[in-house]
Length: 86
Length: 354
Image (cartoon, rainbow over all chains, first blue to last red):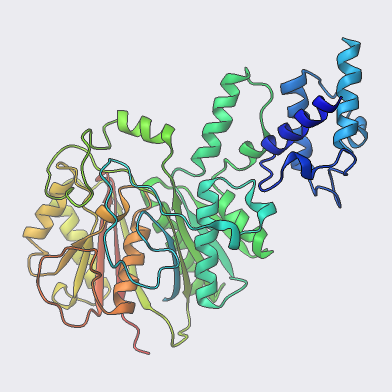
């Protein structure tokens, strides 16, 4: 899980071009949107692409988005659950 | 129309530089790249992360121009670009191929459109006023300028921010190079007018102007006229167009203190300029500018920036070689440019009598 969390943070930084932010600046429970990392709706689309590109996971239900992309930890959990399913 | 302020990011030291082109920045290549500022102090870090190079250059140049004019909210934002945001377009198209038309990144798609820079400026300023972009190849900047002039003449705006932005990327440079637009040998930009060979040198730039229909007493220059004409058959037709343009603006060639021409070092394309230089322009002081900024479809914006600053500073800068004729005060400047001998344009400027 720890490896996945670190990997995910690096991928988010690269995919969203978050300048001057390092993986250690993003705590596992930091909200990704609004008051946390401050991501927006375009970033949400980028995160969907990220899941598909690196983990081959397609987010089929749009209603799951807010739960899945709440924090890096919720993303990692979603990835683990869906990779185990396969 | 009064030109109150300018902003310019180019292959020369033009952005935020207090001195007016003190020396020519030399490139020994067939490609001139813009000298960019550190954007951290200019654009918010959260916004900059999604901006490609051309967007950053456009936004920074526009902001510099507005700051110089002391205007927070222009009545209109008008941009001209031929290539648009090529870098993002390249990323988007490459990904389409790489991922078999799936997994397309939204950011590069959103930012790849031609109106991105004008839109970003509008968003940054929270400006909901008139916002338009012209994508007319070698007339893109001239069309933007014409639109701005009409808005000012019809009093739909009292000040307009007008700019031209074009970039050269590795992909576009490679394609245009294959099409024979650029020189195949490595040559210094200092030498392009001496070394007669096929092709020019690639250029790029982001140049903005603040135009107003009212004098502010601190204006740099007055834009008197603009004329464009497409694919003239022979040099005689170009001469006619020039003389009609001057007549329309009630000025003669004798009264023109300086002519800025768009020679680009291509032996074939430069013949038109050579012909004009030896005939109707034979008594005028003439300078070239494309050894400073390279050739690109909106290069006329660089020429206009140069002309405005020559009037503002009252001198031809050291970076420019000219035909040695000493000039008294430069009051009237004519710009004649053509892009690939298809898109021809004339601009006339004069000093402001503040």
